[in-house]
Length: 310
Image (cartoon, rainbow, N blue to C red; front, top):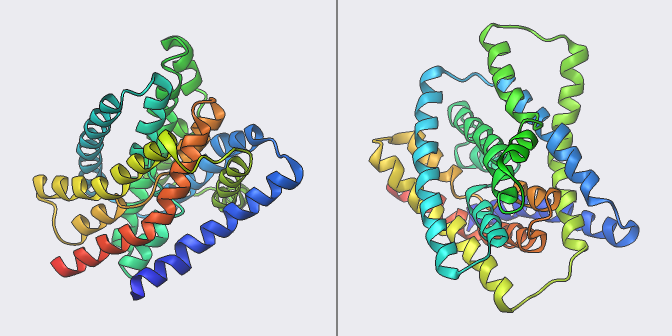
């Protein structure tokens, strides 16, 4: 019960307040959601990724093991969601939206504080979470952009769009600067810090603006699809992560951190992609919102079971 209340009070309620602010602002001023989306994609998201990678001490061996886990986990997760979308007989646009709602999870503004809570601020588990967050920033900006455009654009145009995403340049730049011990001056790092701090608030307000501008459907096919997405993300996700950890022989603190990292709700990236490229924004917004609410229970169960096993 203590863990549940802690997650509710420190994770879900703050997120909900920010989302509510976005809803209120949208109802009052009819904000331009595409402008908010572009700010997240091209400015705030790259800034927080650079800031964390540049300032976090991460060893090469840790990078290799986490990336191996991530590759196998994402492959299995993709296979499961592909079976689901084909079984449901979805059209191309909804297929990509469903895939994104399961494959892209909230490893930043939910995953990092959750990691700090579950592992009492352990710097080792935090570095694992930062690497997962890095990959969860890279994949939506590459595969995610491709998936929401594949059914309505040609490969060359999609690749041209992907190459405009700053995140694919920010990640190697951050690693290179840290690897060669290049110390950036304050007049550069201070603005990066400001932009990094702005990411979470702006992304959550963007979600609220999208929720506030759409007509909710509380039943029917859309609700079924949202709940299917939530089940694949919140229940099947951690189970697959546990399987991968076992297959790769990862145990102890690393194994637990990787499983916890997989248990978080759907990422705001799926909403930003849906809005930016006009691909099922109502489904994507509801999937994020519902999975965040349901995660209060599912994440608590995951943490509890890991404690039992430990």
